[in-house]
Every structure is written in structure tokens, then in C-alpha cells.
Image (cartoon, rainbow, N blue to C red; front, side, top):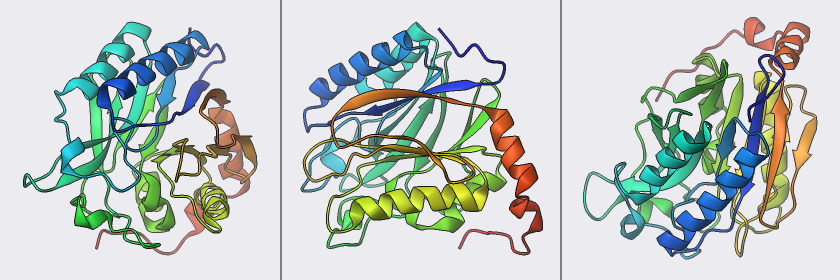
Length: 271
């Protein structure tokens, strides 16, 4: 069942707990996608590292190719239920010692619509993601997935701290920004997450959907912020699936009232 309002898109936020066991994670993903389909979702968004996660760090040992079991499952579920899916995974890197933190986008037809490889690796707050993973190319074409006519831009987790990344995807046509994340817990980290999600929405006059991972060492707290910065949906730390409806008319109205994208004087180019 899809959204009934013309142009509206129903987005399921799948805040799941992820383990190191890939088979168990695939079972969990299948359950939540079926739950989202039953709730009428047009798009399901899963966290960063949805295929496999370890709090101590994720590397090449968790990598699967695009024709591996995780993405194959996503494609089958999308085709079966007629909805799009966005999910974090780890792809093989250029060398066997490195993986690539990636987000895949699958259309409602089950076809792979695109892949985003994380540009900003999490080398902060005592973590060193670059010790295990390789960064995506800063000049790669932005990933924008169109669902029922609404363009969704795809980034992930630590990218949220870099406003130029969001602006570049908005310049590519996105009206909604998706941030699948495994946002590390710690002092003030949940507040940073909430503040930055709202800021990216306000400064770009877009809807921002942050989908956090549930579980130990991560914050959960998935959130949807409108182009006026108002929080429309916010979860706690527990695993859960919530569905929200996005209205393109509301985005257009916000941009008419606040034409900051038209009024700016600078453009973003890759480093």
C-alpha cells in the first residue's frame, strides 16, 4: 500500500539493532521491511552498517559485494513489496585490507538505483574509521533517489558534521536528505545529532531524515526535521519502526517563504 495523497511519500524509519552476525541481520531487515510495507511505506531507510556491525569497529571482514547476500535481499524485498529501500553496508575496498562504508539505494522495482561511499570517515572522539576503511571520492556524483517524484539525497553519519556535503546534494536536486547512521554514544553526542539534523534542514530548506542504529554504544534517536527546522518525528533509543508522510507542497512553501538557496552568494565544489 503506497501513500494516497498526490505527491506524498510515506517513509519508514527502521531503527534496528545490528549485530556482527550477517544472517541474523538479514532476518531482522526482512521483518522490518515487511512491517513497513504493511504500514503503507513507499521507502524504508535502515541505519549505517545495517548488514553487520561491531562496536569495536567495522572493517573489511564485514565487506560484501553488491551481488552478495545483503544487497540481493534488499532487492528481493523491494521487488516483493513494491517499495524503495536505503541501507548502510560495507563493500569491498580497493585492497583486501580495506572495506568501504557505503549506503545502497534500491528502487521499488528491485533494481539497484545507486551507491554512496562515505566521504568523511569517522576519525574523531577517539575513533579511527580510516584505520579499517577507505573514503569515498569527494568528487563522486551525488546519490539522489527519486521516490514517487520526490528526490532523496543520500549521505551517512559523520557526513552530517560537514554542511558543504549536504549543500552539494541539495544542489543535485534533493528535497530530502537521508542520514543513515550508527551515531556513537558519548557526552553531548545525542544533542549534537539532534542539533545538526535540524541545522541541515533549516539551512537547506529540506526535510532531513536521520535514521540511527539502536543498541549498545550508539544513540538511536532517529529524527525527522522539516524545512522550517521543526521536529516532526523523534524516537528514543529502543529498536522500532515508525512511518512518517512527507508532503512536497510543504517543502515548496518553506522555500517560497525562505528563499535562502536563491539568495546565497557562494557555491560548493569538491576539494
